[in-house]
Amino acid sequence: DAGITQSPRYKITETGRQVTLMCHQTWSHSYMFWYRQDLGHGLRLIYYSAAADITDKGEVPDGYVVSRSKTENFPLTLESATRSQTSVYFCASSGQSTYGYTFGSGTRLTVV
Amino acid sequence: DQQVKQNSPSLSVQEGRISILNCDYTNSMFDYFLWYKKYPAEGPTFLISISSIKDKNEDGRFTVFLNKSAKHLSLHIVPSQPGDSAVYFCAASANKLSGGTSYGKLTFGQGTILTVHP
Image (cartoon, rainbow over all chains, first blue to last red; front, side):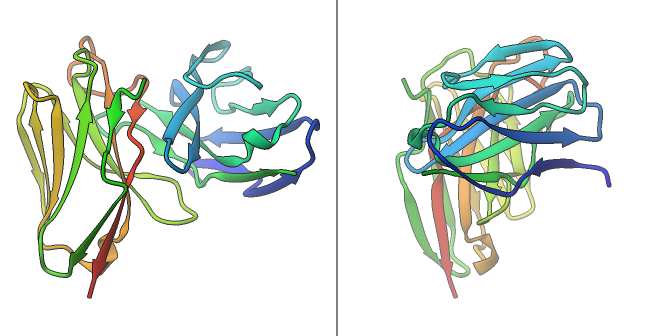
């Protein structure tokens, strides 16, 4: 199916564990983004990518790693999860349009 | 430094009345503005946008107004319906070379929870 999909939808992990959130889009959009949503902060940009093998930091990159070896995939890795990384994570992609981003359905991550 | 601010965390409106959601920004480089709507357990979805060369854009019941001198935009929903109850995010980008499109980074506000009562 065409679109942007995130997996898993829900994840519980322990402090210190590594966890990877997956994002896949089928439009061949150049730009992909990772945001986290927290109460009182709205959506904050973690990392973004302008094309395969091109990534850059956003507003809150600490503790996160990304890669983009293929245009359609943009995984986000928490190298050593902390409780402050408990959040809802949204992946988005963008072609050159007036509609901005298309978002995935989100991954709710809880770090215990 | 919050470059895009939505100072009202919530708004409650009666069905059929007007809903007005506000957004302020500080970065004068922003030239493209968008509103997104988000339901629980779903990702945000695009609602309406406006380029800085315009001061108004209308799409059905939704109208966005831009006041560049005040660095302020607002979303008007008329008439409001219970199905409009959601979180609304405003967003801004700086794309002066993009010809009015938005494919770069978006900076989002904190969101406003709109509740429309039947």
